[in-house]
Length: 211
Ligand SMILES: Nc1ncnc2c1ncn2[C@@H]1O[C@H](COP(=O)(O)OP(=O)(O)OP(=O)(O)O)[C@@H](O)[C@H]1O
Ligand SMILES: [Mg+2]
Image 1: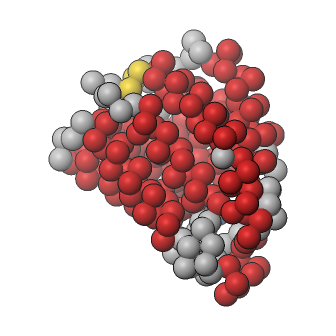
Image 2: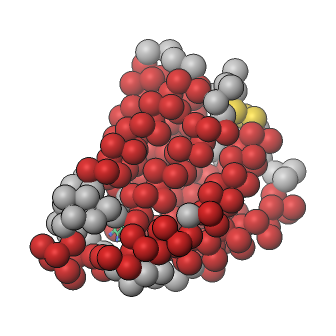
């Protein structure tokens, strides 16, 4: 079993929809500890990705990811745009030329993507950012690859780990980004970027549930 290019495109389309559906929720989370724009930022970026989908459909998976990243970089401002742009560009570099993916390929791509975000934003686990959702998901994926689990099982476990990481941001005091300006008052709220990152991996688990 492998994740084909068409399945990558289906996942992207599903995530675009999920972001549109969760735009208000993400904005509400960002209004508590930020500037109430994370939902709108993400939706603006992914609607621009939607407009580019026809030009991506005959490309390899690496090019698809890079196109998504470049589109996010050029349409989304603030912190979230460059961070998610970097995420997709680094995943695209890792997947250059590929027409289908194993669970190990997907794991390597998510890991390279997350390392790109860490290099750019300098956040560590516990700083109350998207890294808190992504890092445990990578650990779960690496463990799934080691155990030779199916793609769907690995993705399910990574989504579960991301969900726990997202929820674990609630009591944390933010140490990076706009939320850190609030200091102790940032505690008690779920991080918006960790939430959109959980949704990314959760959508993969749902769309690729039969692999
Ligand atoms: N240095 C960082 N490293 C990783 N993630 C970060 C960092 N700073 C912020 N984030 C993530 O970005 C999310 C906020 O994204 P958003 O789209 O709202 O940008 P923003 O902070 O409003 O940007 P700006 O205020 O500069 O416009 C946070 O919830 C957090 O998960
Ligand atoms: Mg914001």
